[in-house]
Image (tube, rainbow, N blue to C red; front, side):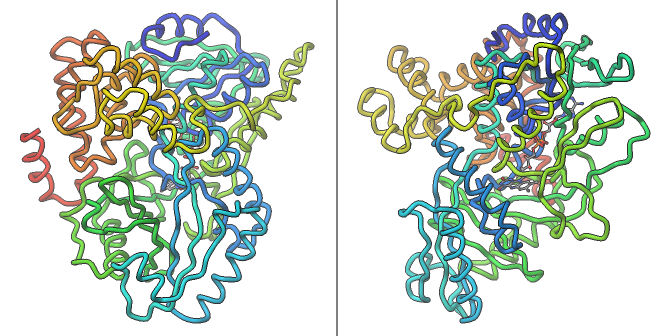
Length: 560
Ligand code: FAD
């Protein structure tokens, strides 16, 4: 069984090269993670490889909402509303810390918009079987301003208030993968598929390159699923170089600002001149604004953000709130992601369907693209159904129906009330500072209990990586030992999320985190320095939409 750790990497890689798997999944985003978990729950022998870190692609760059499906109602897609609403309930049951209800306020600026909103939300409540305590409310102008006093009051008529669920996309991927590993899947990051091998005209193996050690190995599998997100077409071409591209990539960016500059208490929808709904989401000491939807043909890794993208979102906020004018210089963080959508001739980015599609290539490669985080479990089920059908190996392995609706995700044992779980940990271990517990529970769910217990037993583990910051040595050790964090960026960006939610992008803690990781992973001084430099460059690069920010960031880094 895999331990999901650097400690057994060599053993896991040997396993990958020796076994023949029922299924090999290419890509460690949410789509691949869901598939590997579903397949393991059905008793298949499964492997997954990811070319960089888990969730490094689109799955750490979303708006982080588990949609209830209101938007699909606007598009008249009743099937999708029902599916999204159902899946939202399921994710909340499987991992309550990764599906936290949050109010969404939709301002209306005329009586007719207000009336339409009211009918839409009424219909949605019934169709989606919304819980009693999460039912919608219509607010008049004064009630709206009482909730969000900074909203621009001119022409405001009222608002609709309903619930969406907030998730943490990269953590959802990691918890899903950890569950699959615990069930017996072989999973490795920094392993890139560079080619596919065939036997009797069928894809039978993948050539995989270890991006950390440089070695190459072959993973044999009876079926291969391509869940490579924006890279789906590139992997399809490994099967047959004549494959016609099917994807249409669109880019969406988000900006992070200090919460004091846009002090909202819930998600607030803002309108743009082109009539798209963008929103601002509160998250601890920051808020984020998103998103854009534009055609994209640049680099796939870490897509860049243009000044035009930034202006578009800031203008929406400036038009919607009466706070002092927000400027690009105040942006403390940002991310950009690519939607791997299926091309539809003549459609603009916003018009292209978000539905997923499964494609089967001439040599049997199964590719999946499109879809959402919200419906990842259902997508996985459909793909694994197809895999099982193809495993005509006499024994019909995988006939067993997995219980992907009920088997809790790693970290999912907090119970419904995640805050109560946090309170329980604080009272059981009063010597561990409360802010540390409050940081760990939303990120790691019930796994935080073992971390806090460890810190109570060994106060060195509770030592902060920088003064005043909640991130501790214990958390870093956990991410390396139990979550396969292999680089400084893996921890700061996708396990501990400081890249997003810390106003200094985790730079203050970076030297201490790197030094700890060096001890755990056996890096020498040169390797450790390279990790810090690379992370600093990464932070700087995300803000290169502002040339003058280069110097601002450099000054900040020098301070850290
Ligand atoms: P990815 O996450 O990109 O994963 C593919 C992985 O494959 C990558 O990690 C990549 O490194 C790996 N890979 C590629 N090639 C190879 C190879 N040769 N070998 C090995 N590995 C390889 N959905 C929601 O439900 N709610 C939202 O709020 C939401 N907001 C969004 C906002 C934006 C701006 C965007 C862009 C999307 C949003 N989505 C949202 C959609 C959702 O994020 C995506 O549908 C989902 O993350 C796609 O996941 P994926 O696993 O298919 O792709």
